[in-house]
Length: 343
Image 1 (cartoon, rainbow, N blue to C red):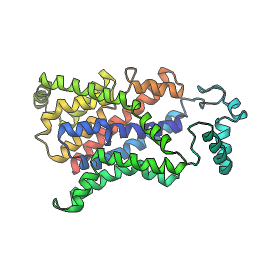
Image 2 (image 1 turned 60 degrees about the horizontal axis):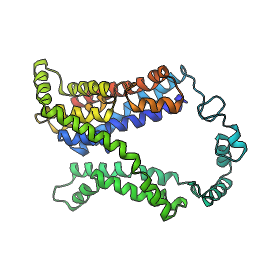
Image 3 (image 1 turned 90 degrees about the horizontal axis):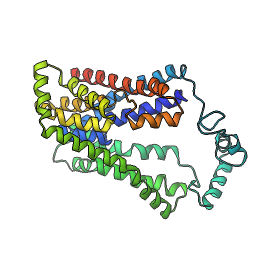
Image 4 (image 1 turned 120 degrees about the vertical axis):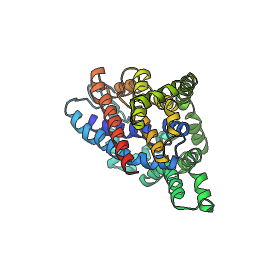
């Protein structure tokens, strides 16, 4: 389980803290006045070693020390699993049968759809799925490249500036998904509308977290905490990147939320960003994002989500998930410091 799960979780966590258009990095970029394209490019570079070390490398090591049953099998958190396969359900055996006979699988899916379930008639194409997922990031990367190589009065750059705006890029991804992952797999207009509308309650919690984090950040800023931290940094002669990381780490450990840590830390160290170069400000946003991932523990909702999904104990979750998050955070800081020497 962990051999597969840890690399997947590592990729998600890295994107969560280091790569726009996740809300945390976007808010940090805005608070610090960082360049979106530059931050995205540098964030992708930093993400590579983070994902490799915290994902396949650590996942291989920890999977040999924590043996977890696969959900849906005997003894697993999903139940016994065998009965579901025998009565035509959707257990591991049924999935294997569908893969062995795609035609039969599609016919079964069509029957399920006609009976009112949400199963698509056809499976989505791999290329179409990858293009849909990567479209928003691709548009923002094109915008970043345009800012570097095109003149400011260029018509192409103006188009890329609009298309690469996070809201526009994400909207383009949603619209494309309606076709590549909607009509292309057999969903009708009503089903697509239901899916899009049903996604709104899922982001309610994220909106509340971002709003609460922004409010908390503003209280600290208005109270003068940012200026206090800035003066303390001058007295201690701490590298601004390390300072941003440490502030985010402290808030992460105290509140448990990576998003709140990113938003609040960005507000606190924002006065220091005004004196830095554009590349340093971008790296500061990444350092804060890396610090916001440090050692997820029991006050983090993600900790309990991973624990329950994988059927682990608290101790096992700390040894796997919490350590993985810490590896990402530390490697991310080291990557940021390394880039600060060359950019």
